[in-house]
Image (cartoon, rainbow over all chains, first blue to last red; front, side):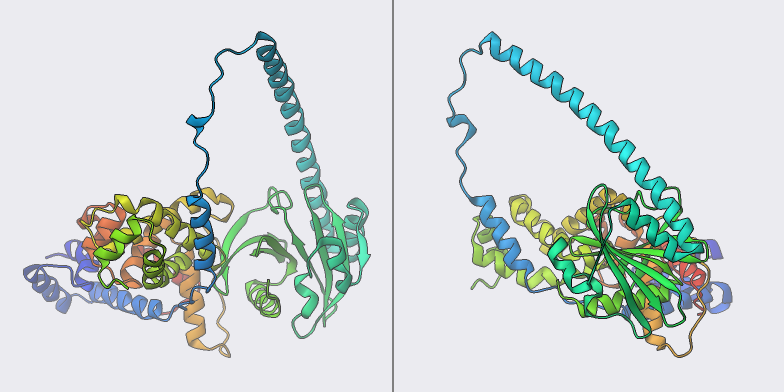
Length: 276
Length: 177
């Protein structure tokens, strides 16, 4: 067998899926080929690393949620066929329905155009905020507060405004502190922004929000990463990054982080401190 | 309590809640584990729930030609891939991460876990499912072929590709074998 044939069968050889005859031929090749042997060693190392993967246990409440869903699914509904079918439909009703549909389509078109404009405006305003954050975080903060009616609140008062305690309420990483917190009315959701300071005086902004952050970073390259086993969306901002992850039904976006390590530590701290 | 899979399946087909619970209890860890690897921990709970909902709704379609476990994996993989397609904003794209510098203070094992998780996340979902079914769930090629509806020979070539791409991703992330 040549290298190409062995390479094609290497996984099957490694996994013990080859016939005895073919297995012997591959073994024979490997004894004299350091290149293919090296690839096989790579497979073994990969398996060792994979065996070290964290194996989280499923939460206990899945069954109760599932059972509830099953109960709802089996509840008997009146069959459609039991309903009397209309024998004839009056013309005035058809006309009224046609008018309603026409008005509805018109309203939807207007609404969508309005929504697009609103999203474009948000994208442009947020782009300005991010650019300014890089130069002067305080000024960026003021811009955002002014645009979205930001109300300065104590972290503990946030609950009154949005119905939940913000993730930072139970503390931040050592060397970080919350300088101020704001509740803002963004176009599609009410969000909480916590302006935080590191020991060296540099700033990060932590947003907790219901809406997707897609318009916030429009036009900036986005990638997915894993932070402590959780998928995060990462956007490069000059020398810093913005990282977004899901937290229950909401999302957290941290702006001005140095790197993924900082993101992972911050996320671990916020999730450790908060049961939701 | 019923003690054979066939009896449990029959009872599940009749909508017997105890049998459904028994089936769930005996298999949910495998499904959840697969979901964590396929869609991430934050969505694994919901997706595991959805998988079992599908399983109980479609259990009449389980003809017993394959192992129940294989059928469950099939439903789970389909659900995960469908979820990935829907959740485009979380879909993994080509990543351009710079090689990560090693911090010697960090525990090596932790580093390995983090690296392999990040490398796995970069693998396209179809390849990831095949790799996880083999390396984590330890399914045979025949079983993976049943789960993924691929010819058995293709499973080997996809695993070759998955392993090589994973090694490349690990190397891009700064892993030195």
